[in-house]
Image (tube, rainbow, N blue to C red):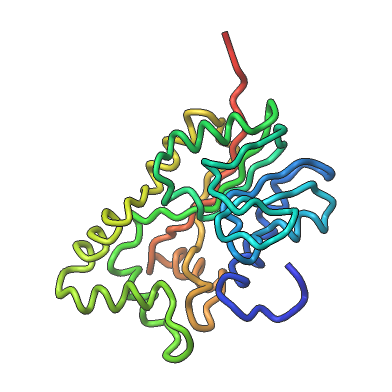
Length: 233
């Protein structure tokens, strides 16, 4: 987002995703709501610096007038927005179809939804081993470290260990996300892209894409752009 050094995985992620998000937006000004902006504020600072009237909703959002510290399901949208951005915030919601309906109802006619998500069903053992071999040996353990350790301690196969975790967390698959989004949005873009690189040691988005292109790992990231379906009848 800025020219300052990227020091955390979350900052690397936001910096890498920002060009994709930005290129999907209509010209500023416009009203934008980001769902699940997180403690760093997500894309809201960058959106506002580019002239958009942007706010974020997340229980862990920063303090300030540009943020609502609540879940999207409990956030009251007082005026329709032109764009909704949801970055890794949909795969763990309780009622996926309710959230999709709420997003659709919050948009202006013809409004745009930009989603960056994870197809967790594509996180197979080969991909997991590739990731685990590229984890930093020192520093603060991240989410992939926890998956590696959980698998090692379980004594189970990767599929059994990972699926038990995903089911306990009640995570939606990428296929479920795409199916739900199609109920209210016309798909403008759907692509598989890298997902793990911010949590890996010295691995870039391009490095992970090269491994995907070579057939070494699965592309588990989802890039989706949809337009609100017109009301008929």
